[in-house]
Amino acid sequence: MLNDYVRKGNPKSRNRAYVVHRLDRDTSGILLFAKSEQAKTFLQEHWEQTDKRYLAIVHGRLTPKEGKISTYLAENSAQRVYSTLDPARGKLSHTTYTVLKEARGFSLVEIHLLTGRKHQIRVHFAGKGHPVAGDRKYGNGDPASKRLALHARSISFTHPFSKKKMTFDTGMPEEFARLLGKM
Image (cartoon, rainbow, N blue to C red; front, side, top):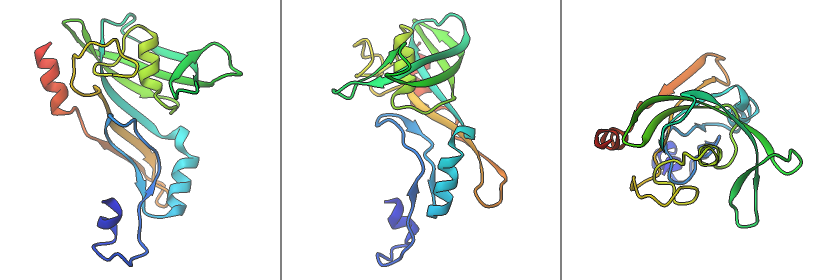
């Protein structure tokens, strides 16, 4: 669909969108695409300097109310990601968080993703005993949310050509507000 939009309805157009990163299937929010391969390469090469913020609703009340989760993440043959203490088996992953609100056994958490590994947020919070609401893969089976309560809220990066700092923020999804209202 995005390529059709970029091509303005002309299927023979050479214009296209280049994927810079991905989100987990059920995660909502901001996705970054580039209009040229050169821009895509620049953004991917500078990915560690890209500031990525998420919102999540997790089970339970976290203590401390802000902190950093650091583990090595590995993937088994069933494509399930897990934390390990063995640096030879996994990639070091860092997630910081701040609790914004707590109610009825849930916490709204702002997350700063310092590395970007597959299922990182979901595995880190499940490992702390606070899985993301609605997470069918790493959750506790409680159908608190019809969807995964994880949202890529904002992204800040250096523009590949102008070198200006660019920031995009979507705020909180209406569904999160409804879920929080029920809390």
